[in-house]
Image (cartoon, rainbow, N blue to C red; front, top):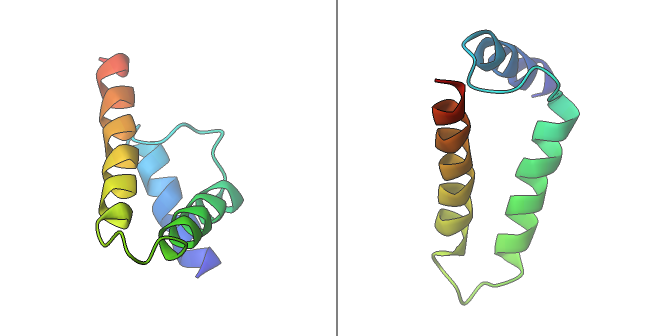
Length: 67
């Protein structure tokens, strides 16, 4: 999982979608945190979707800032 994630992260960094100073440990920590938080609120079936949308929105904003 680490090796595959690292390869995908490196590709995203080469494409300019992710800053170069982000490591696989950072990515796995973020994924773990999002999963854990969404499990803490089982009655909120859309929490995971909102958290992922937030991350995607931050990614889009970072892309816009580069152009």
